[in-house]
Every structure is written in C-alpha cells, then in structure tokens.
Image 1 (spheres, rainbow, N blue to C red):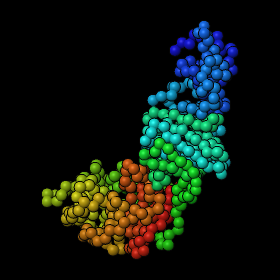
Image 2: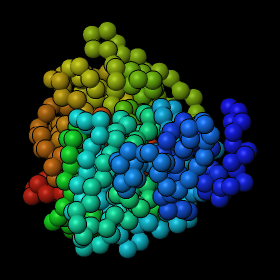
Image 3: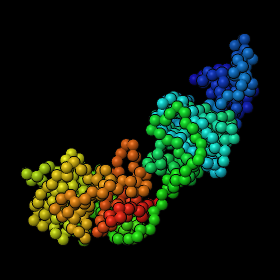
Image 4: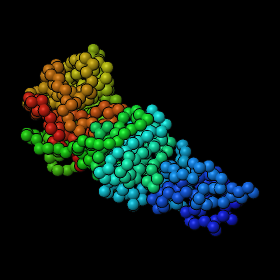
Length: 482
C-alpha cells in the first residue's frame, strides 16, 4: 500500500512515532496505542486540520471530544520485542500471525511474581472481565482459551499487575485485551487448561516455564464455559499439581519385578519403582492397541517366540523365531466370534495358553493353545471394555484394566472373579490424558499376588507407575518420569 503523505512527516517524528505513524495510516485510526516492553504505552494522535493536512502529535487533536482527552485502558493486540517487528507482520484479526516469541526480559516475568491462570474452552461473553484482588505480591496474569476471547483486566486497589499473557489455541483467531495503563501485554499461542488434573495443564506449565520462567502457579480459575466475569482472589489452596514438578512419587512398602515389551519385541526390565537397570526407555514401549504406537504383544522369556496383534487388533500374528523372523497369521475358526479391536495379550508359557481380550461392543476373552496351535474357546466380556491384559504368574489367573479404570481379575479359564475401582485411587492420573476429550488409554496392570503395578504408557514411554495393594485397596504413586 502506498502512503504518499508519510515522507513529509517522517523527519519530524522520533523512531517510535514513525512506526506508530505507519500503523495509524494502515488502520486509518484516530488513536493508536503502541504496545511492547521496549517502550511505555505511547499515544500518537493522527490529526487532520481544516485544509486536510495530516499531522501526528502526542496530545489530543484540537476539537477532540473530552473522552479522547482522558487516560484510557491499554488495549493491545500484538505486543512485540521492539517496534520494527511490531509492524512487520499481519495486523490484528483472524489469521494474523502471532509474535515470534518472548524477549529475554519476558523470560524472567515470573521472577518475584505470583502467577495466576484464568482459562476455559469457551466463554459466555465476547469480553470476559477478570477482577484481580491480590496485594501480597505482583501478579503475572495468564489468560488462555481454546476459542478466541476478549479480556478486560481490572485490578483492585493495591493489586500490582506485572504483566498479562493472553493466549489462544492455534488457528482460532486472536484475543483482544484491555489491561490497566502501563501493564505490558503479550499475546502468545499456548494450551488452554481449565483443571489441574489434565495433561493440558502440564503442557501449559511446561510452555510457561520455557517462555516466561514459571515454576509454579499460585491459583487456577478455570471452567469449560467461562462466565462473563471472573473474580480472582485468595485464599489460594496449596496443591502440588500447580507446580512444574507436579505430584511426586513415594517409596513403596513392597518392591517386585516385571517386564514390559518393546516395539521391536524385547523384554525390558522394570520394577514398580521404574526401569530396573536405570535406563530411560523413551518412545519404544508397547501400549494397548488404543495407545496408537504399537499393538499389544506377548514374548517368550528367551525372546525366541512371540505373538502380537496388528492392524486394528483384528489379526493375531505368530512369530516363531521372534519379532525379527518369519511370521504367520493365526486365523479365527468358524464357531468363534470374529476378533476385532484386540486390546491385550497374555501368554502363560508354562501351560501353553495365550489369552486375548477384545475391546468394543460386547467384547470377548479368547484362549488359544500355543502347543497344539488350536483355539480353545471365547467368553463374552458382557460389554466390559478392557484396555490391557497380563498374566498373574502366582495365581495362574489374569488381570486387566478397564476403560472405566477398574482392576479386573479373571481366573485361568477367563471367568470374571473381581472388579475393583481404581480411578479415584491413582494420584496424578488426570495429568496423563485430556479428560475432556479422551480416556486413559495407556494403562496396563502387572500382578504379583495381591500387589499390582499399574503402569501408564504414553507415546511409547512409561510416565507413571502406581503400586496397588488389593488387600488394603490403597494405591501409591511409586514412579514418575522426569
């Protein structure tokens, strides 16, 4: 766009006013607020005299209404590290690019401040007013939403707002922010998280730490559907989930060993306190079919023979020489229900019985004789959706985790014996998945008599291990990946 009047004006303007003049001309606005930590909010007025001559000045234009002469809240769309980059991208609006990232100064914004987060999926109003009353320390206020929202920040007397970070989910417009005069505002792209027990909150904390130095959040005011007005004031309850470190594991009363299967068919040594050899196995551990990385598998103790499910869990594959050797499909014979969405395998090599559970619909518990290479039977799971299966070598039975996060026990014939709810006993479980949109699909149980290790596998990595005592029906978080 050509701006023929600007060259005659440029020599009269300071560097910040030159940049502001460009934006004023592009927006054809009478009043522009220039945001950014490099300069205080500077008001530049574009004035036109009776002859049509345009000028830019620091005072309201002659004849301006009284409202234009009064201090107004700082309204910011796109703050920037310095003025040149502030005007190098798209102007505020749908599809405009977000700032490149925080400046070095912003990366220390959390220092000496209490961090408060207000977040939601959507809001009942196009402009959410956030009333902040916190006088103990300066406040770094974080405002996030899935859908683009307008925010009006109001500070109570004595409350010092150090800065405001307003974020929106990728591709969903950009927020408009009205903040108290002189308060810097940074628009960013961050996750929304309206509850601490959600993987979204962990993602938000990690991003805030990397970009603004946040180690801990003082308080979260969140809701799926934010009201038009949110009040932020104490007291703020202490919660380890509000810290970057999160809930920490504790030493179990009982320790036991077990193996997990890797993507390439190795048996990896674990205990209920983490990897037995101290290694960090990242991105290589099989979870259930629903975990998305690799389907369930059962491998003989020496690793020389294996069974696994492929596709959507509807095909059983025999690997008589291990995962790296030849393979044969094991077909379901007439008379047995078709196998689909197989979710777990467990192999009792002492008896030569392979057990399979399928997910979805009615669901079935299948048994296959690996010595005679013939199917034994299939029992209905009566609509109980299971996500994994393992052998309890001490009892000869099987344990599974249901989609409702229950510990489910079967005898050696696949007959249901017991169901114990676990969901409310596994501390920090919510941080492993997005509770609003998904289910905890990576859980796997390993039994050692009355003790069980409940393992969470996410993206091929063990993130948590809980030790559960079936006699006391209590669980401890005994391992958490750093």
